[in-house]
Length: 143
Image (cartoon, rainbow, N blue to C red; front, side):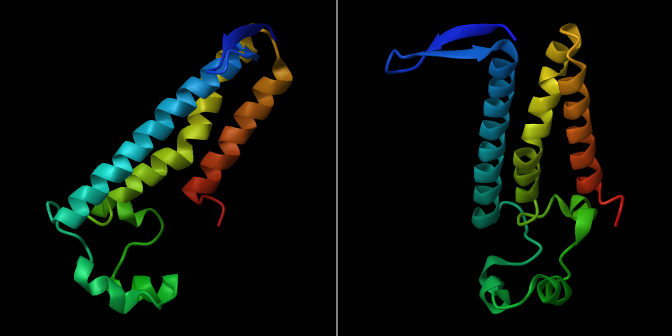
């Protein structure tokens, strides 16, 4: 693992490998994109530009319910069924959450070429397995 030098704002040298820089760069872009998506979707929701599944003024009557009771009372989608409702103002924000939840996996995929070029089979296999486990879990394949 070849380290390169970067300086921080206090001019203290920091050492990080090329894959660490790649991971951090992809992570930073993903987090920023997810944050922007959350802000934009929230603005679209509260401004009424997109019609919500549950009107904002009705939300207080559901606050005391469990998740299962809330879903039943409001007809809210469960599992991956929200994807079909993504045009609703209160569902659109889930896209930003998906980006934030998946950005570490995308960052891990971004460093795989470094491990492959170095023939670092241990990190390569562990990283691939990590992403596969997360993907299988998110897809709810093994319920």
